[in-house]
Length: 289
Image (tube, rainbow, N blue to C red):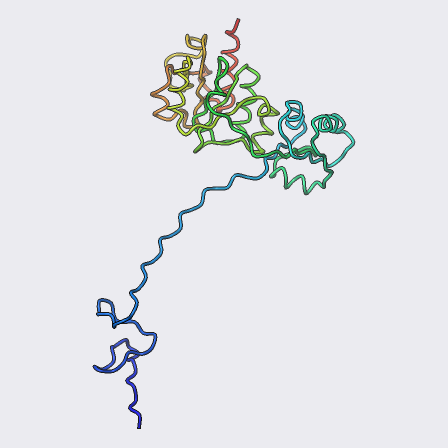
């Protein structure tokens, strides 16, 4: 008669001495391992999160932004239109620039424009091309944004900057709005003409600009000197605009060469970032010969 093997106690107790362990069971924590057994594997480290992927296509919605994109010779992959009638000028520009045109439905345009009002026209381009700081600092005025996160404000500031004569726009690559479909629409074509640089650090960018002969002037609501009294706006200027509601960050506030405020009626608390930028930009333009 064959002897019956001892079974493992369901309450987790080890089998009696001399008995063989049940197949597939593991020794208790801290107990010596049986000869020939494999040590338990260490847990694998959690995978690091992958960086966000750059979109394969960039949308430019609206007739005027698309018109400027075509007129500037900006690289476009395709022009999407809902109707051919009424878009003859855009179609002719697309033909001259050799940009393919495709007629699509309203739903397809809505998807391509990412929810932004498109007026029946959307251009698709490769991902937006950012330049380096040197390329954004070719003229006498460059606009530096410190934490502006609203794409509507970003687009409006770009539009005013181009109109006032700025030759470049500088954005931090973190905690900042970027050039999206919404920003393109608000800029009304300005991003087709205005170089935009992304930098890892605004303070370091201001130091680099100082080495290129730029004075930095920061808008700050609590500044003692008004915008009209600034003496630095007469030269090469890096105009620094702070975040909506909070203004300039502490380190940037310490780095700029001059703080100025926009004089306002006592009953008005402040202007939003794009309105404040427009006032300062055109004060700079007013002083030009």
